[in-house]
Image (tube, rainbow, N blue to C red; front, side, top):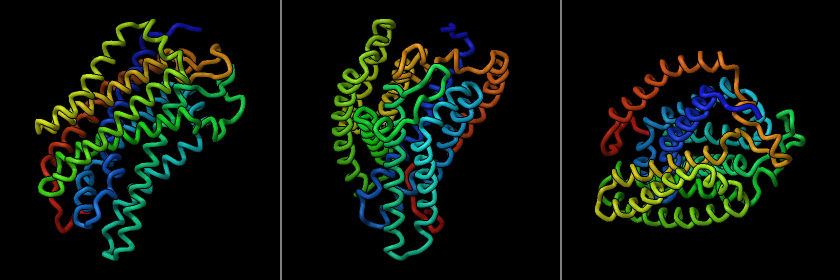
Length: 344
């Protein structure tokens, strides 16, 4: 196996940053979609929709940048991933499209049946997209039938893509984003609705905690090699400890009425999960269940060194614009949600 070059590791790390940014930012608005049917009043559902209305499309910019980066920096991994995950990725694409359409179409008519249909569609699309993202992560950790040439020896079937372990990770992702979304909604609402959302936080946190324990047990059972990374890199236990502290701070911050700190802790938890996922994979991009020698590593999957250095220059020029855009949008639409004539 060829050793990874510093520029290849840089791009692997940058992909992790982009994935963490997307999971944190789009995570809470997917979480809002998952919780959308918890309220029954039309006015309250409009509040939930408008809490993410100005933000959701900007959050998905991070997913677009992530996709473009992996396509250019690791084309072999991109090709293998889209071959193996073609069905889940098409389902994700359909869910994200339908989710955006649901938000735009919901308030175009006042018919109760019309709005109910789009409410259910918004919930279903948000939940499905989140579950599929988690299932893909589970498959990346568990591995796929990859051959020596970087192609699949057979197309992954339903049992490969949605087996016990990927399904557990998918459900864990749903629980995590629901918790993240409930904390965000607490920040954006007030009055009676905010009081009820306070109860949602405790409920979703409890479900998240159960799924966290279950997914950890499944990971150690189905993928014991993930534990080996902690023997190779003992400092990873520091990240685990920080992750546990971040999780523990969520109920503490809510109980002392500091929801912003709870949101920061939830974001830090998601970032830590992303980091541990990347370290579990490294130095691989896709793990082969056929033969460890067939793993698609960072070195095997990367573009030429010249290409990566040119892309690094472009990234250093472009990333400040992405960060500035994100910061500006969040600053402009800060504060509590107010539903007006031109709201969703």
